[in-house]
Length: 399
Image (cartoon, rainbow, N blue to C red; front, side, top):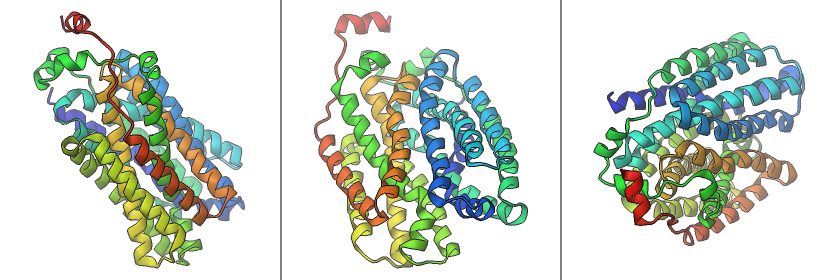
């Protein structure tokens, strides 16, 4: 099988999953239709991301056992079903459960499958291919923004959920049919590092026994929190802080999505050359500086778009590099399970950002986020590759 077909399937799937990043487009229409508070509506996004992250633990372990195709197919069905049911929601609880829980489980079941498969097919280009595999997720908001706006304007917000549900179901299930893990001989052929790779395959339990996991986990949490804080409140930042009209502020959704996708590919490729930790330190530094700027300076339309674009670019880098770091440090044999555990940092960050914003003003939340990213930069200097097995075990596994 041509391994680039797996990449094609991954991109098709991730574009549809990534439409979740356009959630801020739903905030005002839902507030207008049902009279709900903005903070309560945004909780839907947080529930979706947190549920999505939790589901990756189960999905990662399942796809390690039965392969990515069936797991991604089930996920596509659940995602479509969740949005179809959300079209009938009349209470916040119904919206949280249908879109957030059922839809979130669908995203989580599906997300880890193309990523794990692509990393296994491309051990020679791990950073780049991780970036490409998740770039579609970043592009989802950009591609679906005009579709969602057109549907909301013409059909209403509830009907928009219905039509999106059918679109996601059809396209995600179609993309899932292209996913397949490589045979062992293909892995050996494409990687000159096959034997060392076998020596570094940690089980989830073994990974949890290393201090490096916890440093990486909190680093992932701090970086994701900054990105999701900006993404989930992008339109609101433009309206409330920069004093833009809602149409101009909504353009932030497009530029964030574009730079998010670009960051995943560019920074993934850069990490193959500069190294994962060096690249992470750069993007933590840039994120800290931008968040500090947004907390202390007056922004206009241009500097607003520039700031959120750079945050989206760096956020894309986090999502591209941490799968590669997990594979580098803990091997690819249990990649689905291991990255599912690492990914919980991302899920918690979806709640942490909005909770912080609900507690303190946005500008103060940006400053706190800048401090967390500065701390993560220091933590990156303390991480070293974990060691596990002796030579006799390497020979045994290789044979």
